Image (tube, rainbow, N blue to C red):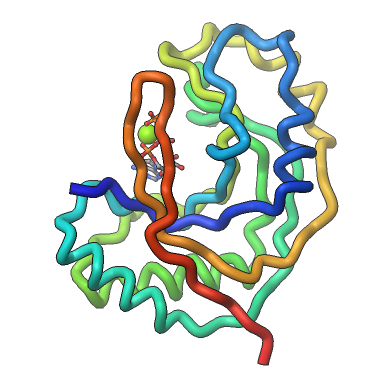
Length: 182
Ligand code: ATP
Ligand code: MG
């Protein structure tokens, strides 16, 4: 069964800038490669193929204009504990929330149970198998709090399939859905 999620891909220049954050003054972990950089809107999980096709059709009906995505800041998950993930922040604008909600509704109409946690848009940069010891990442986080890049226009979003591999998940787009300003 495919493991699915809905996400926004990033322009290559944006990825270049994010990848420029890679440094070796962080404790060893798994840096996200170029192909792994994305902004997750909804994690769906393991889905029977027939159901996946229903989701694809439903997402085609999302009808929203393109919008600017603003990327900046860095942080960690969990926020108040030893980090498992280090991320680059994304401004939670009303246009981004509108897309998050519209995609969520489209999936829910096909039986998807949306998670109740608040949407916290981010781009995962690094993952640690074991949570880092407290404080180990704080210097790096402090040093990059001001990180930001020029906003870009989101013109599409995608349904991704994730294959979990020992070296990190491999993602493939199963469907791409255009946003357009009329
Ligand atoms: P790995 O699990 O091997 O570290 P990954 O997390 O990138 O790799 P997936 O677990 O398939 O791969 O997740 C795909 C995307 O969905 C990622 O952006 C991940 O952060 C996000 N995601 C996974 N599980 C959840 C969840 N329960 N809630 C919200 N987002 C999730
Ligand atoms: Mg995961």
